[in-house]
Length: 234
Ligand code: UDP
Image (cartoon, rainbow, N blue to C red):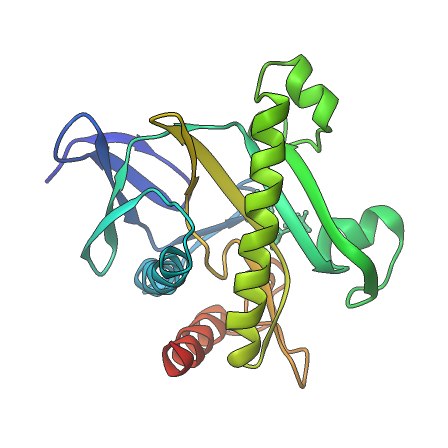
């Protein structure tokens, strides 16, 4: 067993095969509201790992540079050790979640353009929203890095919208993280129903972590459905 370097809310970070790699193991723990709500959902780690690996393979095939080196087993991946940029990039295609709450718009409302938001990665502060000049003022990222993350996030959004649409799923919003590795910005962290809002195109049925946040029924039924549909289109 590789040494545990750090235990996150939903993943274990372990030593890799050398100093340039780390092993990430997906856990079955589900958390929401900055860790206030927590549960063990048997099989979630495996489902998220498989969904994220499938999405990463698709993004890689389409020229997106990512941290993924190799899939190790059904819950573990070997990834490049990158210096994580301490912002979460959130992309919104449809109003939902904190955006709907903050601006008083119905969930599902049409947006005239894709929204790009940044949050400062800090559990203690509750990941507050942060703007570009605040990011540069704090030295969290440079203006060029913000530009690059924005452009990458929008390209990833186009690719993911088309992938999910083939699976009859609407990509409502999602969160991305990036890291610095050998002078490049690469995509890091998972892309799964934990980090995306995914609605059935016909019924708007929620297939993502909102099932857990809002007690909408069996959480993993939604995740399994996402995996099954993605497998059919990949
Ligand atoms: N998100 C995430 N991690 C976070 C915050 C948000 O993965 O720490 C995802 C969330 O699942 C959703 C999108 O980013 O798909 C937008 O989240 P929102 O700002 O609406 O916040 P939430 O409703 O999750 O509090």
